[in-house]
Length: 173
Image (cartoon, rainbow, N blue to C red; front, side, top):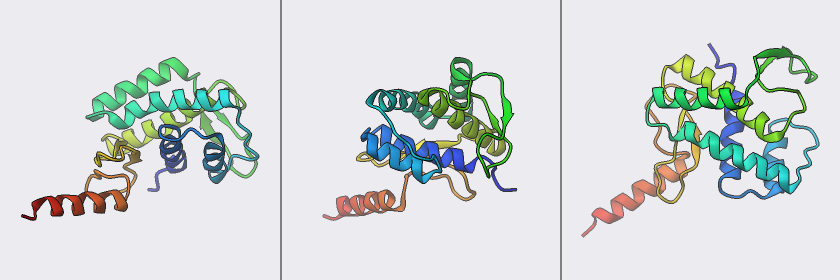
């Protein structure tokens, strides 16, 4: 079965990758646009709100085990989410679940609730942590565990290769 919330999880990973390291409004808008948000115009206060939400969501990716990740997600739901509801506000997207207060609510609440919903679904499906933070000391970006195979330690093949090369060079006499 295909994971139904893959898009919201990948959007969260991509947004956190920008918001936690470079909160430039145009970079954030590009990520949102690449994930289907039409005509994104962000003020500096919108970006500050999104950045604060990203810091809170980072705790899900930093969780050391599934119980800790679930506790963080439950805390986020309690703080941000309204009762879940079905909506079809996006043309062509169809009916989908929302846990935020309004279709045009604040950016931070939208990021937390939509991301937490996807991450919670991923946790429930896999019965494991939904993601992690890159093990590269020079990176630390979040990544999601959406596929099978061995658990990931790095956000990208580039980071994994950089760490392997560094370890290999450190072993040379």
